[in-house]
Length: 434
Ligand code: HSE
Image (cartoon, rainbow, N blue to C red):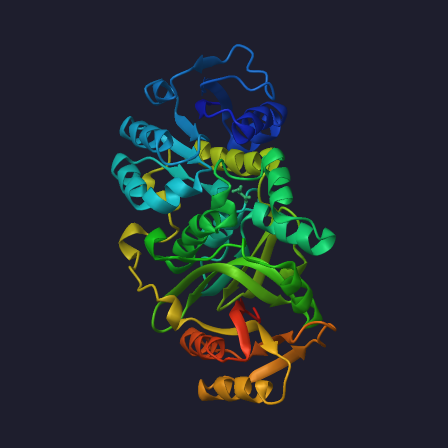
């Protein structure tokens, strides 16, 4: 059996997990690869007590790994500074790359793939999206016969963990985030999780694989979960919905919608039951119909599982001619299509509104009139009784599916009514049915 030399760069949660998995499952891994996968080098500024490196050569300067005799550089540093330098240097030196770095692929993937293509090396990135779920392989290979119509995913474990704890235990936002950091789920900068940037990185990658287009991180509409109030979680449930932080990519005749935002989804939908740090991605293909992929989206074991699967794929096809390998984005490079990305105003969704309104005759009819003026139908409505000392009451409305432009117009006009207090809460609703 031929040996393949691997250099692991970065020895954090995922780096240590990958090193350990290659050791503990060595026979299984080698049997799949038909190669002997050897970690011949580690690049890390410091050791990690979670793994015993034994006699492995360690470079404190991670860039030195790109100059060494390894066949594959595994980039598990994260971020877009040293990691980017390492990846371009390693490619220039003819090394294959395995990475878990969603920010790097989402923001610089087009250049990285072009560089790799010109050097005839592979860049594998299964671990960049949804941790241990093999969603990249599913899109790139398993669903290759389909025109993907849309995909929707819970693709940030930290955000889902926070929303789940708020719903189930009424815990405070900051408290849950601290726990997610301690468990190693959150990004180095946790605002990436909370503000939806991490999910946007992952969505861009999924959309490129689904629709055969270059990576367009610049074009994603992103809203985080920090403004979600626990009362909306409760009202959503009364209406038969759960609030999830979703990444959505949809194809229409006009172009592609790419958006990350809190979303009400029907409780009856399987993906609504995905709780805690778990991730799930739904993909609707024209031939296969709706499909669902579920698993742990973060953590040492699940992410290492995806990294090592990539190592097996890359090691197995090291000697294959490049036109016999699966292309970086699944489609042949010359078949990629720079599809237009639609503005959020062109999105077509239903909406959940919560207003604080004066409890007096005529208020409801003036709001209904505004909805009607904007061509919006109210599908459900809840009005709570006032507390003894309050003159305002919460009014919750669920609309039909219409354009974002109509919904925002109605919100603006309702907020201008004297009988309405402050801003409206506005959360998009997706049925995920067709
Ligand atoms: N911070 C990410 C998450 C880690 O919470 O999903 C995995 O990408």
